[in-house]
Amino acid sequence: MVKKVDNKTKKNTLSVSAYLNSIALTSVRKEAKQIAKLFKEATACKPKMWGTSIVGYGEYTYYRANGDVGVSAASGFSIRKSGPVLYIMPGYKDYASLLEKIGPHKLGKSCLYLKSLKDIDMTIVETLIKAGIRDLKKTHEVRM
Image (tube, rainbow, N blue to C red; front, side, top):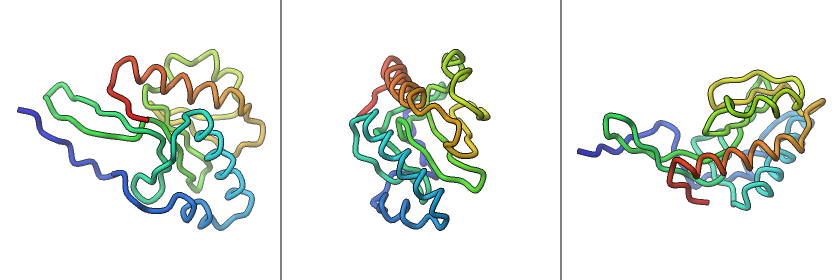
């Protein structure tokens, strides 16, 4: 029997613009808007808020081995105290050659942690976003 997963972070009707404009530090707000523009161009998708601090682009349905099914953002970002976090849902393990050239960063499974956009190659970020969506579509139902 399929059980729908009740994710803590859900798509909602909160304003992306309000979230971006609420970022107190001018330099961080400017970077957030730059990231938002890049994601919108790379995905050709209108952004939606997921929870109170994740800007998501598209969505996908995932299935767990136990039969549970859930929905999550296909890609996106959040601005944290430590800097921007970019979400590429297939994860970054297949993108090592790109990551070598991107600039200073740390990795989680599906998270790319940046301190700022200074010294980050935004062309590579765009390539990662597009590759992540392309690869996610190979294994999941993705709606943009």
